[in-house]
Length: 331
Ligand SMILES: Nc1ncnc2c1ncn2[C@@H]1O[C@H](COP(=O)(O)OP(=O)(O)OP(=O)(O)O)[C@@H](O)[C@H]1O
Ligand SMILES: O=P(O)(O)OC[C@H]1O[C@H](OP(=O)(O)OP(=O)(O)O)[C@H](O)[C@@H]1O
Image 1 (tube, protein in one colour):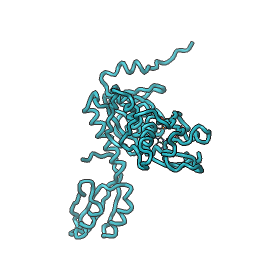
Image 2 (tube, rainbow, N blue to C red):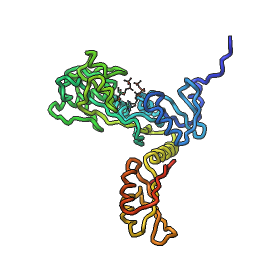
Image 3 (cartoon, helix red, strand yellow):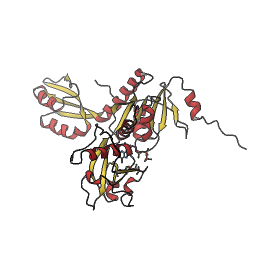
């Protein structure tokens, strides 16, 4: 028999944490890579053994725990894990679950919107069918992976059948009685349920809409709009470290969103130019050796950069440069 190299076990690593802050990150799926990129940008260094779902950070007293995105709000909500990254849809589902269980507290606070993983949880029905409004699904079969959110949503519809504007962005309708609508759980490929005759409608995530259209479905209402979020437990083990990680992640996100725009302009045109580039707090202005001229440097949203450059040229700015920001700390 060959000898096996020593493979650390999850329980052993967990038992030897020595007061480290636990930070849950998605172990797979669409949120994993952008989350790992964010950790790298925040200089949270770690080494992960293959197959092991826990990794100790090398340069901070943190341990990363790799968990399914759907389970992260539960672990953070229970308070054993201090921080987590998951979708707002998953946090909303956790809220809907805990709202339905007497004495259970949601236990989770959203700290930061991370901007990636943008999608919508939508009510969808067959494109060629008669249903055009979610209230028409009341009493019928609805299939979803988000059972508690869908239950709360249809409870709202059943209570206010005539109210066409029932949405639960933020507000959760109370589930007071047994629903007439039959909500069934499936773990994936939700979009197939209507074609397979299992559902009259589904509640599923939509990003580009390709999956929905390929399944012959159309969206008729939005239950939750989602992006990835940083969440924390209500009583983290080390609030200072939570604040440090939050600042680092915030710095990386700001750096991704903004570029630094630099240009030269006549002082007489400075007012017009700085109206175009007001900066986050204020632009930095320095005098040039050439009389009457100033140099301006200002943070500009990346998505607006082309229009900003067009406008700057129109007011006479020259020597325009746009520089990437590697990292940032702003107020
Ligand atoms: N098409 C999408 N576009 C953008 N974000 C998405 C999309 N689908 C899911 N998400 C986000 O990613 C989160 C995790 O979904 P994903 O399907 O990647 O998870 P998973 O852990 O691999 O689960 P599953 O095994 O059920 O697919 C969702 O809760 C949502 O916030
Ligand atoms: O609007 P689109 O860009 O097409 O994305 C939406 C699809 O993405 C997710 O599924 P995923 O691909 O993660 O597979 P799953 O069905 O196994 O969850 C979601 O559940 C939708 O099916």
